[in-house]
Length: 628
Image 1 (cartoon, rainbow, N blue to C red):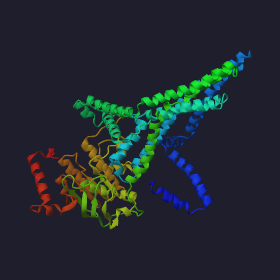
Image 2: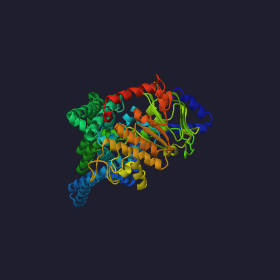
Image 3: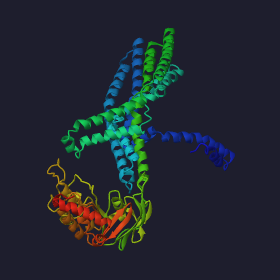
């Protein structure tokens, strides 16, 4: 809230209540403000999500923290009782046995707590991954996945699993638990000191607790999300993925880039470590002040204890008790909790924030109208303009284009003309920045987006390879085997593999397909959707990995299988384009020419004819199988 407006808003609020009510508001506001500040802290968010990851394990984790924290103070008391018994010529068996039992319990609870913490850390990691999957796949649009700012923050949020800026979560929970145990143990020992003097726990406990403030610069990495840090994270993650994922494996080895890749990762990781060290290194003055405070507080208490012992005010057992307690209060000091909690809490807070921000960035306007059987008459782009987020120049600028239902339209044009953007708008992955895409005169934004997408199927140039059986690659959501086999036949992919064969090497009986075979499987995926009710087909360079003869064959198959569908074809190969009912030439985001192949070829100086003749001349000069 703007500080300049705060007094006026407060005045408006209070002026409408009675004096006593105003006093209550005034008194309650600081508490509400304090509570809001606490809830907004990343540490609060971290601890608040633990029960959501696993309620039972979280409860056990906290119970063990309290138990392990209280037991050291109990051990101090039993040891002191043993010394007192010996000093007073009484039997020490009882307190000594109690001390032994406490000691054994402490030793047993440590490994148990480590296992519980590791388990809770794994559960929390799984929960955070679930939230990230919801954040990335939930929004109906794709803008949030193409935003550099959000993808950088996604990399940063995933650090709970990457272990780049801090330990992985299953290790962090153990370190954080150890820090909390020390805090509870320090408080327990401070409570023991209260039996000596009321000021003792305040003096020594306050001194050790002050280290968290005095040494705060050594744990707070305030620039975790600045440009340089995010760039180092992104570069390290990218180099790591190149090294461990298979797509780059061939080139890394063929061109001798293995050492280069490792060096890139090492350099980026080292840069990240250096940035963190520069941000959190200990300063001389805070360290000097810290030592001074600790020496003064502990020295004063121990001097007082020694003075009372000499004076006979306290016995030897009490001296042992309070001296051990004084040392035990040091558990309150700056430690693992201070450096392990901030990165873990930041990751949790980043994940929670991304859910909201990605939902907003990937939001699309969607109505409630059903898209069943649409379009019956036409799919139209009415004065459509579109500019990608963050871009200055529009990709589409006043596009007016109609695709009659049940016909095919091919779109050609130079790179950057807006062809693929056109396909994304039809698929409902974006919405126009101005104008409208309409089905039978109904703006797609008035339709339920899921209903519309059930009517649309597509083959993209960068289609997905699923490392799953052929059946799943063709029909991920399921379909009868006869439908899948018919789609494979229509795509010319019958017999590429058994339906249950996993399409990836490394699996038992798995296999790998050639680029052309994969492209046919991708086409079969779209044709299977057509057999299940899709009526709009988008083909974005659907046969880029096939030779000219294979392309002609597969496109004839596609046209036959999609007869009656409204088809949008984007291709740079005119041997394919000429089969479409009509052809549109895009230029600078607008329709430059529109007509059948024969009509456009009849334009002596037309753009389409010039592009067609240029490609045809190359085709004549080269072998047909190598034209691309």
